[in-house]
Amino acid sequence: MAAIKFFALVVQSIIQLLQMVGVELDEAMRERMQQREEMLSREMTRLLQELEQSTREQSTQEQSTQEQSGFAWGALLFAALQQWQFWAIAGALVLLFGLCWWLKKRSCEPDSSSDEESSSSDREQVVEEEEEEEEEGGNGDVYDLQRFYDEHIQSPVQNLATECKEVKLLVDHFILVMEKLFSKSFFPVLQSAIGVGSAFEGWSPREEDIIYRLLVPLKSPQGHVFHLVQDTAGEMPARDFCIHVDLVCTCLNEQLAGEMLCFLHCPEEELSRKQEPSLLRTLCTGSYLDVQKTAHWLQDWLKDVWVVLPQSRKYRLTVLPSSRSCKFQVTNGNNRSLWIEMIFGVQQRDSDIFVSSRTLDTIFTPSIVWPESYTVAEVKFFRHVASHAPQDSVHLKCLQLCARILMCRGSSTYALKTAVMHLLTLSRWGSVSFVPGLLRIMRYLHHCLEEKRLNHFFFGNENVPEEIILPPAFQTADPLNLFQHLAQDPDAHAEAVREFMKLGDRLARVRGVPRDAFAGLIPDGR
Image (cartoon, rainbow, N blue to C red; front, side):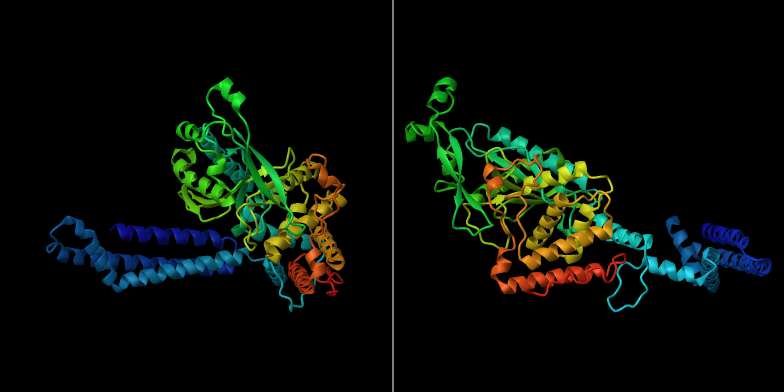
């Protein structure tokens, strides 16, 4: 009986809905629909009565064979399924639903078929190269390009700022616990983490590339001092360093505090009995701080410390393999995962330039070598631009769109970002819209490829904002050419030209970019 009543209510609701839709139709259509509704209503009533009577008879026969009352409803339903009337009702319901959908669709359709074609054109995101469509101009182009950005690029980074804060808090909690655990030992002293990389700069090329990367500065422990020694064997513009660890006399401190023994002047036997070993005996190879040993030390302690962090109640931790950093993944109850990488480094004096543990995965780097890192200075640069640019500035959107469409490797992404950084200091972006911003980037890259020269942003550049603190040698240094290898290797230059052509070709397929926008910007491979 409950099922019968349910079907009756459904039918009644559909009939009422049809009556509402019918108001929008003409008089003749409404009359035909009314007659159809009455006929369907009478037929449905008859079928429901027959089904109810048949089900009642079947239920009476089955009742005597049931041992438990809990099976009664299943038997009734099974009996109903055996009746052809049930399938007739189901068919009628399908027809009614289909009719209702058709009427609703018809009532919402515009009067002109040209509007339908225009709507279909608006929904198209990427135009195939061989299609011969007439270009739309003005605001329509900008709208399509903006929509492409919103749907394909912006959505992965909508919560970037919130997640950056959450990740930063998690890492700082870990550092705080480590500080307490090793306060009386002679391991490197961890400082507050600094968010670096594209996520903390406010953009990210692709959703799968969103890695929340933080640099953890290391300070030398008591009785030790760090000296940065440049590795002259490396080729420019790559600048590599080694961190030489020296022991310093603490005899005066020992007399005043009475807690620490001097590593230089106390007997070895007394040191081994009363004091933790020096950093030279734990994380160093020879006299140099070892990147891999430091990474394994942090990875092991992250697993142990995780259980006491407040974030452990919300996230599940998975430590990922890495030889030169501490990579891990945290996953919440909704299976939303964040990929986090803690790199570590030593600051060059009081500047925004560090030597860090991170290097390109494709390059083998000895475990005692620490490449120079400009990531902290780059984050400060983009924050400086954001604080002075209007709220609707498109510089990050243009950078993100180029990186997303090109799907380029790490080196070409860095070249692309360097080009944008130069442009941001050479010209004003306040009133620049999307397409002109993309053209600026393409013209600048075209010029750099022709000249086979793209200067590093922080060396010998007078346009670096004053807020960014650079070592004095940077300001007087000759510019470093990031495209030096292109001038020396014709094959590498040809590959760079192909990547540039690929970027221009893919950008030209995005609606809103004129087809001839990049004409004449393709280098000839000289």
